[in-house]
Length: 89
Image (cartoon, rainbow, N blue to C red; front, side):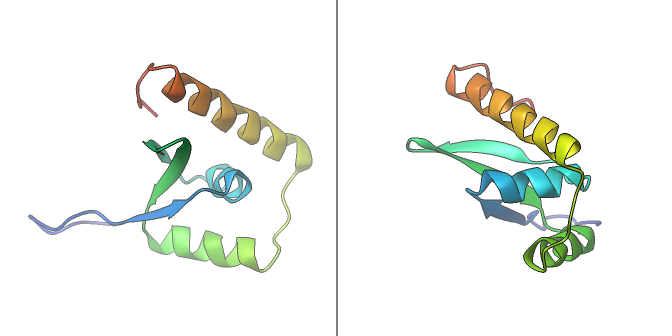
């Protein structure tokens, strides 16, 4: 997705770690921000993201082991962010 000069990139935000895990498993890379005591997952908006969100809402299936691994990785990144190790993800 190309942006025109001066055009701000748009993000889809969610607090749902399982939805974020599904989107990550599908190849979308989140950024993380802290809002109060919560961590928000931010995904750049794209046609692919919109399709993946529709698939998630309609009950798409994924491999359990791969999904579990992605969730553990996201939790680790959240832990690092909360411990002041920055947002390099």
